[in-house]
Amino acid sequence: MAALRSVVSHARSAEHMGLRGFTSSCAVLASDAYSPKPQAKFFPARKDTMLPPETYKDKVVLVTGGGTGLGKGMTLKFSQLGAKVAIASRRLPVLESAAKEISAQTGNIVLPVQLDIRDPLAVKAAVDKIESELGLPNVVIHNAAGNFISPTERLSANAFQTIIDIVLKGTAFLTLDVGKRMIAQKTGGVFLAITTHYTNEGSGFVVPSACAKSGVETMCKSLGVEWGRYGIRFNCIAPGPIETEGAFGRLDPTGEGAKLMLDGIPVGRIGEIEEIANLATFMCSDFASWINAETVTLDGGEFRSLAGEFNKLRMVSEEQWDFMEQVIRSTNKKSKM
Image (cartoon, rainbow, N blue to C red; front, top):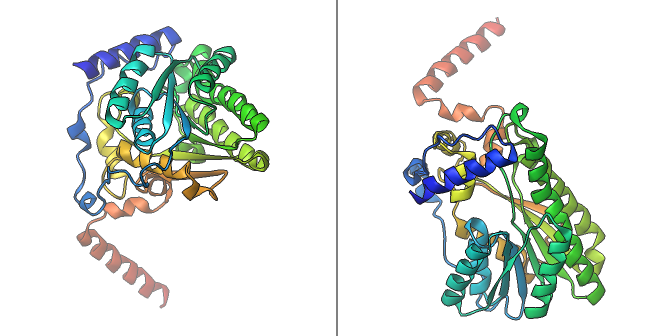
């Protein structure tokens, strides 16, 4: 019922934003719809912490959207590794609950900071608070996002603008604020943005997100080069499908996309939050200090599967291959006559 209430809540919010393509008559999330395929047994998801303890001791990490989903998972992993973590989003009660929960597990500071990332003045105030209470962030995780599925012709200007404001402009505002402080104080630092693989090929029905996420990736590539001389590096992670209530509630509201989704992932399963968290903590650590201006796709091969012209032939049975082989041999024999 909690999932249903969340989906209905998103539908109401969507209506206010002019997102007419969102329907509130959608089903709740069903985890069993994403049951792994047989080959998944060869690709187990490791959920334990990859890096050595205290990798982030004395480091300050800022995670936007850190109170739920992927953001919460990354926050937990950074905290387990010794970081002081600030989590920021608009919903302060959610942040406070997550901060209390994670801090109790790890024994480390988790600071909740209310922030509307679309507002540059709010960004400055939030970073001021973090710097005052924890110190200037050494790592910034750009995880705040907004997305939904809709035929583009159904979108209002406000709907399009909302996604651009959160994803692209909000990421830029926070990058500029923290980046300028890093440069002035000569601290260096790392920025990591959570993007998507459809920045490569584009995607219908999520056009505002595709535009915004592409802009974020281009910014990270550009600043990874420009600001490298200040000791600052930039990277992105492009995740495949990972079940979180917010994302799947908007992008597969009926659960009907589950089968198609799994059919397109060669390893036969969706991702786990801990896998993203382990990759994020690695990419922001000194173990990955030579990775800069790069996007790492973590999707079980989904992007390559969708992109290959003949990849759907993996659905052909052995009997069908036998038949096609006979046809091809016959054709080749006739062409030689």
